[in-house]
Image (cartoon, rainbow, N blue to C red):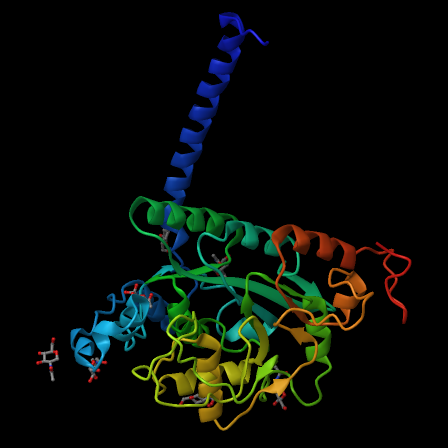
Length: 381
Ligand SMILES: *[C@@H]1O[C@H](CO)[C@@H](O)[C@H](O)[C@H]1NC(C)=O
Ligand SMILES: *[C@@H]1O[C@H](CO)[C@@H](O)[C@H](O)[C@H]1NC(C)=O
Ligand SMILES: *[C@@H]1O[C@H](CO)[C@@H](O)[C@H](O)[C@H]1NC(C)=O
Ligand SMILES: *[C@@H]1O[C@H](CO)[C@@H](O)[C@H](O)[C@H]1NC(C)=O
Ligand SMILES: *[C@@H]1O[C@H](CO)[C@@H](O)[C@H](O)[C@H]1NC(C)=O
Ligand SMILES: *[C@@H]1O[C@H](CO)[C@@H](O)[C@H](O)[C@H]1NC(C)=O
Ligand SMILES: *[C@@H]1O[C@H](CO)[C@@H](O)[C@H](O)[C@H]1NC(C)=O
């Protein structure tokens, strides 16, 4: 049995008071800093400054009430009703911006690969590990890799405020968050993509290439830079849209599915070919072509399908990259280990990794003693 005397409790109490004071002071310093978070008026061109005012003050898009009288509306699941009510929305106010992520629109050609990672506000642990691993901002072979997390808002009330404060704190430290004032949800992912491409047109129009992906994939970003740099005749100013390609897929008409798409959303029975949304590569040129087409393409709730629709409308097609394994690894060899660094070094992207697995894999891959031969991994790990 452990018996605590009063005297042993005093130091603990003092420590608690000390911690409380520190937290309070810290909190206040952070608050002072808030104003400058979005104060980027310095050194902006006139066009950039105008865009800045526009995105901060964009009125919230209103619900389309008459959408409720399309046939069968009342029997649709609630999230689909929400989607239909807000389907026309293309603009929401920006809560967190990073106007100089690419060094301004003119200098954005200095960025070779921009990592655009869809992340929900609550996914703090995933962002933290990505910042330390494959999404670290750096130069590889003299080419710049930059990182942006794109987010909406999550939860409501006090919890929503808490998560927004979390993102602000992360923004202060890392300057890598682009957040808009709309509700995060699976059916709002397309909206997030549309908002990103619109932002990119103003902030980073000249980046060479983009990786568009989820925050739970493992991306071999060094390998991507090497692959992209070696593309013949494409420095980002020609078409590129490559990843795991889905062809001849159809809308899911079973109402129990996460992917359920009723006729009220689309009558089409077949989707155009598209790259799985876990992660795919785009050239800057194709990103802007998608943006151009999206303006006149009705929003479809499955974001990767929507990108395929815009690409098709631009008269372009995706290409298969066998190094992108967004459906998880196919283990075709008993000895194949999906957490083997040599195996992943030969790929571009693997779905899905937990934060601890990412950290371990990144460290193994960057181990100077790692030797990957033809008969890989035998001597290592
Ligand atoms: C915001 O920008 C303005 C104009 O450049 C400047 O005068 C002001 O000091 C800035 N405020 C903060 C908190 O950085
Ligand atoms: C603005 O431009 C001036 C002159 O080019 C430079 O000295 C200053 O550091 C810049 N400020 C910021 C915030 O980039
Ligand atoms: C559809 O809804 C609007 C607004 O709620 C209403 O004014 C209109 O009469 C409805 N139209 C039909 C055809 O029901
Ligand atoms: C609102 O929904 C109705 C019914 O679907 C549609 O006819 C109308 O174009 C929509 N309005 C907007 C602004 O999208
Ligand atoms: C998308 O975001 C808007 C704005 O926050 C919200 O009103 C709507 O319900 C969301 N849609 C879905 C399907 O969650
Ligand atoms: C990219 O290549 C095109 C020709 O294919 C050239 O006109 C353009 O200047 C190049 N851009 C950069 C940034 O090197
Ligand atoms: C997108 O549209 C703009 C303006 O119409 C045009 O200048 C640009 O070439 C288009 N870009 C692509 C890649 O289609």
